[in-house]
Image 1 (cartoon, rainbow, N blue to C red):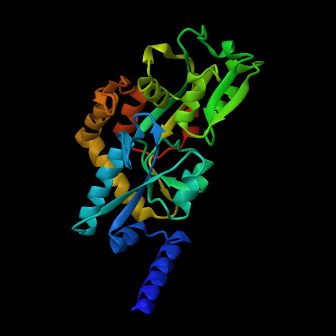
Image 2: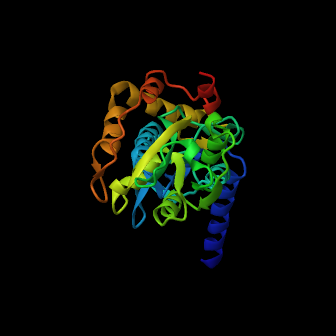
Image 3: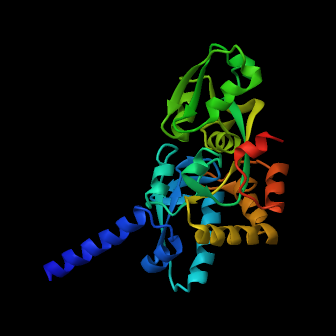
Length: 301
């Protein structure tokens, strides 16, 4: 009996290892295992966040759940076990590459550099990178960050965009890094940073969850416009097509707009706070013309 269990465990390990080491047939993996793993974030605003006790919610989390439900039907599975794997800005790409995560459902920008390592579904949210400060700071523009301390999250590109902005020419500031978005906001909250540079939705989400939301505001110029998309392993066109088909159906039917309204315009858990970020024209256009164009294409406009 013991040897049988050992053999079974070795076989299971071999299968998992095979997928992790280069299999690109995620649909076959899901059908064989009866499970799929979503990469989720703990503090990515209304896109993806935790309620504690292993429960994750948000706009991108719900989109991934809907896509996996459609894939379950496509594969003829009576049941699909969805597992949730917390990821960070630093480890999200490696965990997709090595097969730990099938779909990364957080706040990842689709850009040319990342597309060398992973694939992206059609854009579901177009983000604007902004600056959050304390309301009484007096800071209203990039130029007022000179000599200040600016927080951002390790593994993200936000401060790079700040440095490249033409209005930041000649400005010197100190960078401090949070391990995740909640940690970066804490740097601002506790006065260890004068500003937090990040995606507008993430800034708004963290402000909404603060003890006193009115103590903070989003200011200054838009630093970058970025397409945010669900991420998956590279070289698996069948899986990407299945995910895109589900997302496009939601775009066309108006269901995606309803899901957006639920997470960005209505009170959300755990505090029933309203984020209040209306659907942007850029996101509407991405839904009207589904595509997986990288950020660099947006910068050409």
